[in-house]
Image (cartoon, rainbow, N blue to C red; front, side, top):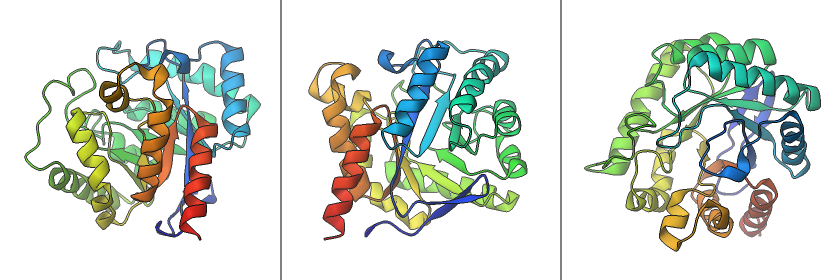
Length: 282
């Protein structure tokens, strides 16, 4: 698509073309994620969610068992793995060939998901900051890595976050970590600007406005703004009423270079991709 660079990533031995924007559907198996309608905990709910993501055009399923919402329970690695094993068993029975990413900042959890259930992508909100073994684990596993920007940890990240120059600091952060990953042999890296993570409302909109500046790093970008507080704190309401705002921000993200949209509402995001694609190819 015009405006996107021809990135490809290796997912389980197959090339995924990120020159065509991809939609990643969220599968939350937490009891306390910020958007209550996204929580899927029974076998039937997980099966239905997997089938719906794929039927509506999602090309990646992002499964997470640890809520990164400020104030959420800080569960153990063992509990996280227990939740993921149960859900991944169901997911793989329903969709054995689906492209799956695991949303975790723990290296042992990532390793289990890749080795036991063929998960193809690791999605780490902490950029390796919360587990010093994550980068070497990703390198050993040979899977794509989603590198997100965050300061602090999920419990404290929203306590008066401060930047002298948001984009400059993000570029330094990403540049340093990308170099580390490349030196370890990690080939496929996707950047996530981390909307809503250690950022005020103003930071989030500044970031969206200047997101194209991150393209200087020459890597594909994932954007996750789905139903986040940057929408409903501006417009009023709650996550349940933030779908329209999500579609607006997803449109802007694509125009500023996003290659992957991480969303709760797959059908609507796929429609955004189709409309933007049509506009940019005319």
